[in-house]
Length: 289
Image 1 (tube, rainbow, N blue to C red):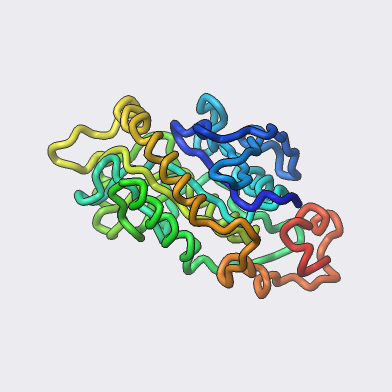
Image 2 (image 1 turned 180 degrees about the vertical axis):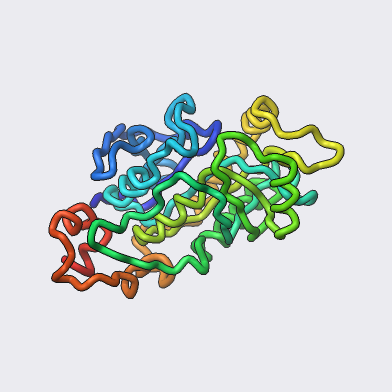
């Protein structure tokens, strides 16, 4: 573990952080393969942070191709305790307009082809995801967005779809009828794995479009999304700076996130394979070491 306590996952368009004093780029090999890119270690707003572009520099990886386990495991071995996720989303409600920010507190899973747990191979764990987002970070992200001058919506349900295609009109209308608020392709797996890794996690969801349900707006397209993303990048960086100003430098406790495995490891200790214990030592070592 290192002295890096804060991580940033950059989404579409956010491949680097303006003003980040880069100290090093660190390539981390994990038991689950390679993360999306080397981690950029640096200082921003006086705090040491680890930055990772989710899709790799130049946006090379589809949402389904992302190695979510390697990304979160890499943050864990760096010592990260609080993870700031930035992502582009579509809006499923008229009041969530393009360029707004949503700080969701719930997820609904519509993915099909993704590994989203560290466990298995002889070790079973069942963590609680009733509250999949760290409530303390929700408040911090909301305050930071307001301070940066953004229109922000606190709480909401994020539908995580498989992609890479956007929704059909029928799908979009069904999600709206279910009461969902925004739709994206990446954040649910991050939230699940961060909870298993006992990392506080929350999302700055940057609205780019109205998906394809809106009667008078054009259906979402890659070109239109990228244009709004380019406009959103500066705002997302401003919000991240405001978040960092509000996060303490020292290690902090969080009853929900930082002890998620305390009562979640089910398998009898004597039956867990040694190789599995070695692989998951950064996650379970304090309980099964």
